[in-house]
Image 1: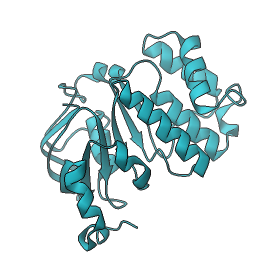
Image 2: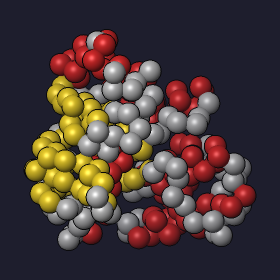
Image 3: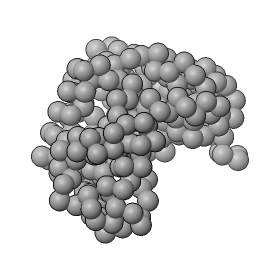
Length: 230
């Protein structure tokens, strides 16, 4: 399993962000869907060991991500909005990450730069990037090295139509090569055909989980749209 959660709860003071989450996310491509503020990003950060559970347990690739940070060496991550340093260049940032993963920085930067079309701006300082450039850099960092699993938070948000097609093609190619994905996305239609498993989180609880064909029918029901999808 990629992620296993048992009786998982996360509170921020009096606010319950997640309650009684029980789920096993298999290898392949999993979509995590749900309305804004439903708990999707909180679940992702718990899975990555960035938040400590209030109660319950969560494992990433069979290990406790909060106690065993080394498990993240096998993981690629892109957040939305992008979490990037401002006062270094994109090339310097990617070099730092590639070296931290034990890879050949020059080779890895060339790989992801070609994938996401970043040659024209990688030498520039990140605080001068447009929103589109920030998005590409954030996505590119997730594909450094040979991650066992890649977490993408809203990979299709705030990108143009052509870029959506490019991102879908990249994800498809890497999935076919054996990489697993956990993707949070409001723009789920282009990704649905690639999904093996779907989890819907609403109001801090799992509303629905299962294989694509099992869950896909719910997308057409009124109950699904009452969760806040459009």
